[in-house]
Image (tube, rainbow over all chains, first blue to last red; front, side, top):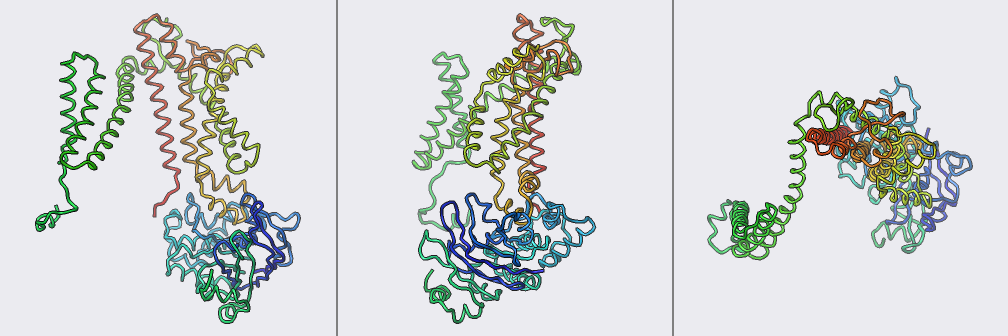
Length: 258
Length: 353
């Protein structure tokens, strides 16, 4: 199910502004990879290039290769819509569809794509909500609007919505930054469970979180404001947090700069 | 009051003298009485003059009394508040007066007979007759105009917000702005020139075309604003699920903003429902019932009102009919607005638990 991502020589632009430059890395399947680094260093931009959401932004374009199990996402004839069905995304702020109920939110991906059997839909919704550890809290009010849930519940609803379409990879862009510690813990536990089935990439500003949930950690930095962000190093999380090979990483992690 | 007021005998820096609550109404009553008094003394007969004098006295009196008792800062605050009240009353008076006049004069002949009969066998200067033909004409012309104008307007707005980039979008925005400013008579003349080229006689649908031209820019503008209000995060959430862009617009963006879009369309309908000039040019008016908007002259409510005034040589029966038709038109627009609000509330994104 889960797929490997191989990025090589990836550069992304906003119009004429180069946001990230020459990034190469491998993301292992069935693992959690965390991106850390100061604000504006291009972590989120890089994340969005992994499911072709970067080009949704006006002026956004990408050079380089992103291989999803040996298939180039930016190859000719590749449909970004099918890429996004393989590589799902959870955003910083919980964003359930306000016009839809909890049930419809989870079913949205399948319904809007028209690729489902009616009889299976109930099962998929239940399975996804259970997968997002939300089922017990909402099973009695599936037809209530999703926006009536608390922030943490909404974020788990968004995760349920993302995993309902059975992606191979799940990208998370600071999924806990708008949440309280208890909801954060719930999401972190969930990430631990989800990595059995998906390849997970998570952007976070919280280094304890990166240390807690991830198997591998990538550190991004930029040499100066206005310069493009670069990948400084990527290694096993334990090593990054105990004995990183680049001085800049150690400085950032120990809070001496950035 | 709090217990502190009882126990604390020292002079407080937080509490200051304040006027009792009935001060403002009292000053208002005093100002009105004084205003009327001055007007009698100066031999002014117009109620408008009385009211203006009273308004000025109210503002000045509030400032003077409050500055004496409460200090200058409070006085300025009270003056600002009283200005707002005076402005509110000045704005409401014409509105209430208009509704009052229309209702009181309109109800005289407004009954079921009036709503279900035409002017076919009644001379304009005689009593009797009704507005059935004008209601039919208005409904058909406005309905057809909406069928043309609303979809084009909404789709233009979708193009501008969701797809439009570069010069084409700028040009469309510019021309929509220009269209917003087109006087209705010009839209009428434009269609009339086409009619003359094809040597056609007046008919209802020609009026619909002119009304659609007037309606479109209003729909585009309001729909555009509504679509811009839809958070980008929702579009991205949908796209990230692998939903194609057109389905995202259809199933996420439009449902989220449908309440506002409907309201905008209803307001545009309300606007064109009262247009007289293009209807006069293109539909011409007709005392008989004509159910077919594609052939022959028709009536419409605003045109009927105008013609009852203009062509009846001052007959009271015609004036009464004009007022009753005005009342019907206002009620029609009012009902549309209420429906729009209802739809907006019904379709609005719900936050309930």
